Image 1 (tube, one colour):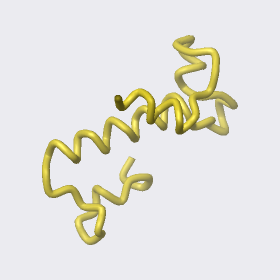
Image 2 (spheres, helix red, strand yellow):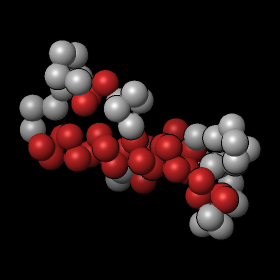
Image 3 (spheres, helix red, strand yellow):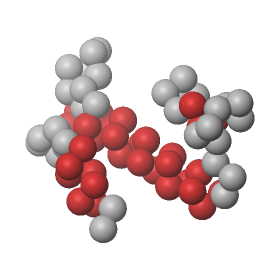
Length: 67
């Protein structure tokens, strides 16, 4: 996760000053990683492999979840 999110390295502009914002960023990363990103070894998303969903989520779908 550290390689994907520069928020974990303090030397960048994306460093979270508030714990609440940091938690939101982590949650968004996990949703994208598990529901939208197709993994090379699985050839599907982890959520599809686990049987939680049948379709790959788009960024628009993730934005709609934030409401």
